Length: 372
Image (cartoon, rainbow, N blue to C red):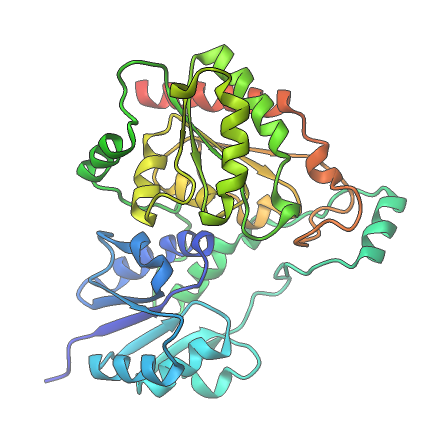
């Protein structure tokens, strides 16, 4: 009698990318409903996958664990097939060392030997190549249009193509993550995010771990948040990691103005699942292009996403009717750089009025969706 089918998916290493893999995971579950499906993820992202219905098991690894240690643990699980979502040689090597008979992943240098099936990248695939300062200056001098990308260039389609190599449908879905109702209620109680005693809760995520080329200036977030509070009577909850605490404190100080009860600063205070639940509480979330942007959209929050050095055509929340993208069309964007070598015109060209208008559109669309 053949062994029951058991599939391991080697997950990606960053929060935003992890959220963008959810359509592929859902499609793979639909294609293999009887299989045991496990996900291998970095320890820092394990909370994202808690309670997700398309997974049977979540396996995590710590930064201190070696390739050999992880592979030995996987070998004991006796998986029959594996899908490597990251493009790294390590991801393919882990599956080979684990002795998994069927190993699928994208073709690439130092990977082919470790895979039993390599998936070629599509012709014309968009590379997120960093531009040099010289190239940026030439583009500005030429004053041409920003780069254009086909719809299928979005990162979600890349992961769906990989799942398609295991028989899954490649029809796109909006990334989606489930958050239990009781978890949302718990977060409301813990952090004082109740509905009583004030206006709607708006979320603000002003950081971006990638670098300053993805961070809209803090003073513009403050001006936008103050204008929205005047127009809607909203209260603000600030999000961010431990490295964003100083930035969040600066914004909280600018917003408080004698009304400390109107700002709750959660930067560096939440687990990943608490962050997901707190984002779900929000009536609108203002954010740079970051992992929390993807997480907010995936839990169903209306999102205003501000893009600078990156391309929304490749990484914005996909198929989300409650997402508004705000960007400034400049010839040098997207450059995909961490720090701008010139004047950050892609972000400094975005005025608070444009973000306020986008947030009000989001709020109106959310109200319409709730009433439909």
